[in-house]
Length: 126
Length: 285
Length: 134
Image (cartoon, rainbow over all chains, first blue to last red; front, side):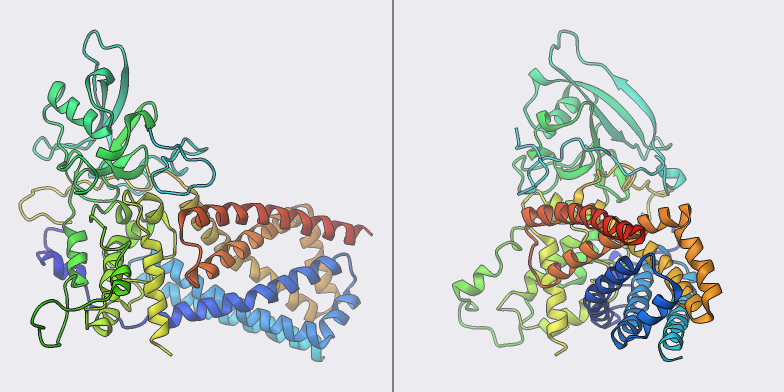
């Protein structure tokens, strides 16, 4: 970059501090803490119900515990996913495409999470 | 001879021993720009009559000759030089190839000049025993830095990042008659931070700094930032934390912890950065 | 970095091409890789739920795919990825409290994560297979 004649300090300063960062960090940790019990419960349920029939699956998901926990799991999971994937994209993509990629990932997680929640509620309440 | 690393490392001077992989399973020239590709180098045989010989593969680059960097192989007579890698490098410079260029000064692990990558990890050449090195030993400059010549890396950007955190006392209170006072407990808080020799082994070994080094400050600079944040005589905590509160400057640290593993002074940049993140959260409520 | 007096750019010293993999960096990148994989696999979780909401026939199709040979192989990998990411994540949460940063703790906790992930994956599949068989 022979055209970049800034001083080393100017180059290191960039556009300055964004004054943000702890919010994202806390949200990631909060969703992580929620996910520990929720995923363990979910995996345990899958394991103990494996081999079951469709009516058994519906009956299980209709119980208030399973319905609530599944909805909470989907919320925490897709939020945690969106935050995590955003960090991965920011790490490796440095062009303008980065912003589009982050938006796409966030919207995708929201959409797929919403679909999962609606499906769960349909089974549980329908 | 240092204690060789076993499965559990208790201090950073345990030399990494040969593991399943000597390098990540990526192509040799993965993501390497054309001008950085390393070509085949020269072979420099041992002098006649040498009995204990060790091969050293050393990264060479001559900015005046042009061309690409290359890897030269030198056979060193171990009976004719001291026990440290720096001794071997200076033996090569004195007896075989005087153009081999490197930084060095104190030869006792306190100045940080001879920081380089040996057998895949960053350390000081003057405190790394030759007997702990692989066969052949490989010597590269500090990772992911522009190379000025041979083993001399350009640290300009790293020092600019250091200047960015303003590593000096900020105090608006009127100057006292004599010293600004500090209790022994307050002074103890500086232990583990003031000893940093700014060799940049840690920053150069941080994958996050490899991919985002233009904006991420890196472990060395952040350790010093913490040094000034815990300095009881400093009065600019707010401004210092504001300066660091950035998704790239601080939060590109993902606690990879290569830094703590590689520090030749046994310091803990990973812990220092965790303390800064803790302050960030604490000041929010 | 630009050098105003040089006519050509300086080469960059090698980084990932030569840096030695260590427990620190290997477990860290595994945590990231498993995270990304789990994000992709969670789409299948939603597919399963949506199929369940659509009715017994859609559910049967998804179930068939999941219990096929390829499905089971993927599921086994997913279980291992899940436990690695879970144990690695808990290790991260412990670091976030400020504990466990000395080198000895880093290495002990690291190997514990590997051992626990293998053990939990084996246990989960042992229990799961016995349930679907019995």
